[in-house]
Image (cartoon, rainbow, N blue to C red):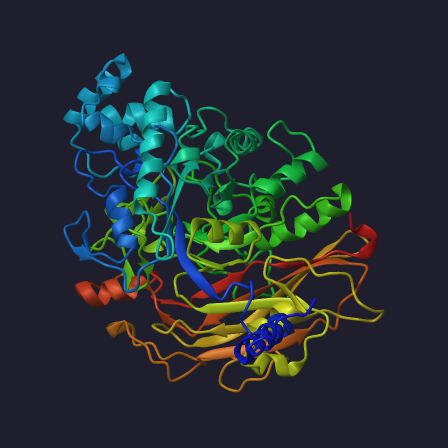
Length: 630
């Protein structure tokens, strides 16, 4: 059979097609098919509104979930004190995490919800709430009426006296619907979530629960509260049941470990039994992150645990448990702070074969105002009574029998930074699960951190630094592979870029923790990049300060806009388990109290801190010896 001749155009088209097929696997575009996250997204995973029982104890709290979402998206809203308030830059995502215990109760009582009024307790509480004239409660002794019955006698000791399954289910569906209504894939991610508020003997074991999914899945359950159980293992069972039932995904994030009085990372379960491999597996599975900084203090490190760390004493809250009902004892500290817990995790891995404390780091606000506003010059406080006013600094945040904590001690902190492939629930949630996250105390500095075996010094100055990091190692939250050869030592590629609207950088540090052959735990902080030409090595001199406290101002005439480094662990021992994380520290800047003093023209007591050095903490990178790998 004789084939018909092809036209010249057909032959040309065939040649082009063949050529294209040959080149398709090796595209000219270096970004084609690249799956690495190209940018960082900023959010708050822990914000309360008037749906939280403790945020809404009187009849005039106006900041609900809609206002909270609108504010996070960049809109101007009116705060409780009547002032207009707006973020300098919108957030990328938000979790409205109201307490599961009595979720939505006060708002529904004020609206005379018929389900609640049909309950004798609900009917009485409705009347007490309507008669309630209290605006600010800072101690249990001051409480009366509705506040005493609901908050002091029920919520705080976690003795549920008003239970209505239908009401609880309907309120949770409202929470899930709110998140769906404000979710805008590609622009803003709104997650359904809540806070599980376990606090046995007022020792803080709180977790924020975050769902990846939309209303179709999240509405199939209700919020599991501390009224159901105060045991974290029961919460994990609820999370597992949710995933089995719906095919969705969920995780939990502990916070305020500094207020747990040694319980958050203790080496026994709620029944007093030693930890088991099963416990460790479930904790690592359901709690991949730790909220390491927020308004009620910073939980990265403690000066008594890290006496050689000049930056360990930052916004430290260490005088007691959640409501300061029990004093802090020194032995508790190692079971409360992130760095100490990461070391204990290495120890537990050696004993159990699984690390129960293998968590990444984020920050969030825990504000109970509906306002995720934690910049030093735009700090809206923890609760309504700590919103800006001339005398908020001196007002008590909490008053106990032997202790008073003033609002001036509140920390303007923090935010969650997430390296994700897109601004969607799915992509951000996946980044949280793999721990490719970092915590900021407020500034939106950009931080990359990679660990590998063959990084070269020149990689720190490469324009494609992140591509080299992913190609030659693992990002924050990951695990180093086995050494490729005898004598190899891991190297770490780190890059930090200042917040474009904020302060220059002072230094970048890498914190190492390790577990030696004798079972001892160690740590060391390494300066790996210093601003203003200072060389790493001996203890670095202070960068100085440009702050004018009276004007609440500073200058970026010191510090660097960008710091990068490749640091190799010359003390590496392949037989020792270890972790590494980066800490980035800004130059000194005015604290929010200095801004208050300048704005309102007030003079504060001398002991009130006026200066801060904001910072970021990356999730760790872990190394496990070959003979210990499971």
